[in-house]
Image 1 (cartoon, one colour):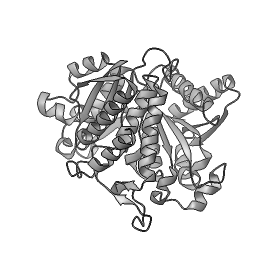
Image 2: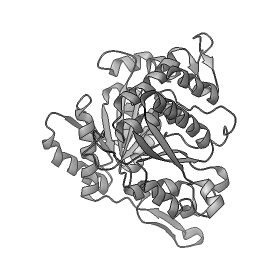
Image 3: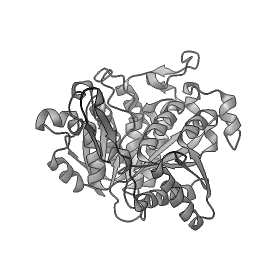
Image 4: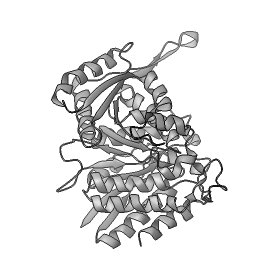
Length: 378
């Protein structure tokens, strides 16, 4: 089978980690008889430097013609003083909106090999895990194309009276379609859904809760619960094992998933999938457009130093195979290769245990970690 992939390496460590995702996908294609054709596109800071805008129209149009999009990272300090509409991050918002990918799936789990990199005590992890193990496995389903990141914004007044505003707004249909993705995900997992909001203060959150209460009756086999976002942030630290699927708004999901990445060992381990209509997910026949990226940023301080962890980018490629192309066996092969590499003690610095030498871990760079994954696919 042949698949076309829009490849957006981006800025900072994006090109480094993207190259290893491509290497892994190509090795997998050779092994399973698939051909992946890449259309490399510019977006983010590098597009600003060349075209004066973070998301050229040609980039978005070319991405729409591909089967899926794989993105490294965007941003960097050299573009921080630009006006908001010209910042590299606007490319992410434009791609998400332009491709219609409204549901962001961010799995977060503590792999047994990375227990030493988790800042939480084993007793805390065991107490909230249904099986009494020092681990957790949750999925954050974040609304991606609405809310405060897409609402009306601006400034008014001047001098001491100058003020800035960003508006949080959600339509009922936006909330409902996101929640249905979350419920369908929960149905395939442990059948628990926690809707996170700030309904005691925010009117938009009250609508989230009303919609969830209304459609929960359609999913009677799913246990539905509600938490305020500040309580959820605390509960992720106090008892992460209590969660199965978390559904929430754009800004809350952004913050909570970063928190979840820390207790998973490192933000360098978390992949993500941004998807549209949920009817055919994962893809069974045909192809479903999706945008796949690690949740870490561009990390300009380590760019080009062979220090970046490529695993989140590689695992994002696995999510692409699963959700957009329906290649479950191939996705599992990548995940198994990553697990095998970790079993052998390979660690980039961000996922090293506190006592890595005592644990027999081998601290490696980007290239060696990527090469180790490739060897497992041979």
